[in-house]
Image (cartoon, rainbow, N blue to C red; front, side, top):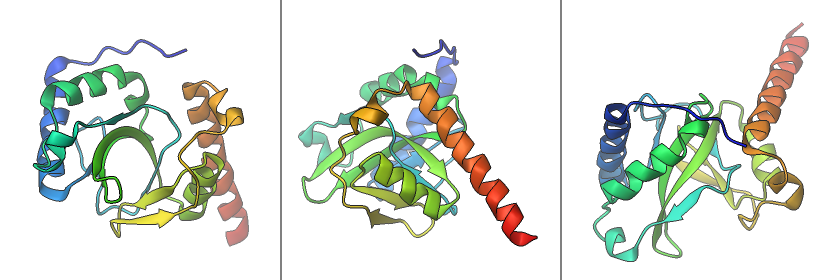
Length: 174
């Protein structure tokens, strides 16, 4: 079950404009709810949700994201995007020549990002600092044990893992 989150339309419009510009320029974007790009930061984008849209092929050649579709996508996913781990990601799949919109989480710890990506059967995760894919060998279909967990509960589980990693790192330093 998702929580109802109210977010001003003018802020959604700002996020949409930012994503459109970045996607047109770079062929992809990773943007948070503050309309900040996360590319170039030491973060890893991992998909743990099934909230994804394949864009119509006629838009692919021009790197154009339809503003209306993107606006609705952001609005419909505001419950997840309200969490600081979540971002809107747009990307181009070279093999299928398709462009996608999706909700991802961003993590600082590469090892944890890979572990979560594999647990969620992802094809790859994305290194935002080096702007490169890290192939994981999955097929992009969520396993039943992950699919059965409510989305907001998944975020709680991820936060617990993050806290566990930080505690472990602190112990290792002593």
